[in-house]
Image (tube, rainbow, N blue to C red; front, side, top):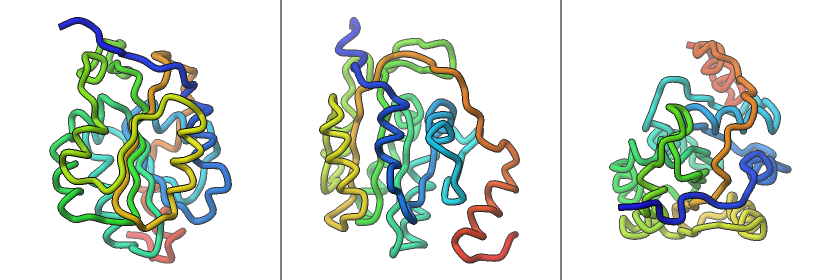
Amino acid sequence: MGQVNATGALDRREVVQKLLAGRKDLLVVTGLGSPSYDVMAAGDHDNNYYLWAAMGSAAMVGLGLATAKPDHSVLVITGDGEMLMGMGGLATIATRKPTNLTIAILDNGHFGETGMQVSHAGLGVNLDRVAQACGFGWTREIRDMAGVDDLRTRLSSRDGVKLATIKVKAENPPRVLPPRDGVYVKNRFRAALGHAPL
């Protein structure tokens, strides 16, 4: 099987900047690697929960957070490689139906953290269609900034669990590293939500 529509034309940093513009109390969970760097490049925030060495877990962490904090909108920003590793979680999320959860997949069709090998998404697997088949309330493939704007307006809606595959260029912009101290990130996030540190 050859490459099928492996990449898009969108700039990942511009996409993330747009999604987080005017974020207010939006809770953000980042997937491993580049999505964390992209969110950090858009501006560090106490409501960012950066995942380190948790490949495949971002969507499920988002589910847990959305379940625990139903009055908050939760956005998971992850990559196609990370989401492919946790694809079974999409079925669990669809059955739980957290209306305050949105998953944004930055899909460059490659495994960016391990050498830019072509991913399953680059070979034609459409993660938005997988989510649709699982029963997500709203799914899209986004290829332009108008679609990103549309997604951003939906972040606070409660019309069902949402997932968008955002087709970005296959590139590795300079890393902007978020805090690497997991205890600090956890306790800062808890404090932002009004909870005592653990």
